[in-house]
Image 1 (cartoon, rainbow, N blue to C red):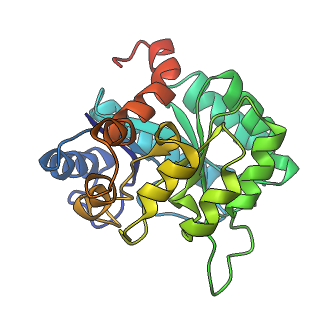
Image 2: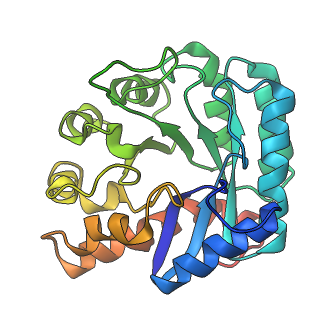
Length: 261
């Protein structure tokens, strides 16, 4: 069982509509044994979307989810700088809609207080919050979060289910930053398939806190799967990372919406 935490509907995919692009994503992923896909952000992204922009991007994901029920799961894309509108959008797409998670990118560092109402509501709705994180040698974008930011957020919200996107990019630093917070999971997607990343994550966090994601179509399914399939870990640990952990993480939201687990 392989579930992909991290996909998008960008221009590399065939088709014009969100449904058509999702169909291409699912078709290619299925060749690699991937059964279900979490997807977020629109066909065209913006780093600091205003409320109308992030709502429009979420509408595209809603259209793709409606066209591929049981295969594609949506996460609502939000900008915490617009806190009231972000909370309203979270209610529209998750509480009152089919989405099963929250996606935050680079608009605002996740250690900021503006995230608290968003994370509190996500916790109440039992959905995970996926936060892009990176540690860039050349310097991060002004609002770009690091693993230490998500650690501070986790300390304030110990009941929340938080995902450290990209394992911070520089994973040798990122993994230790979140080790002390059992409510933080790490996402293996979207950086070069360097040897040792999965082994270090399993050793430091336990296999139960590591999630497979591809960041497709920006990254290939094969290169990102190789981080897990080629790792020097047990078969049972690979099974957890490739799908069982994500299934467990999403199960409360899926059951609440009457979706097949």
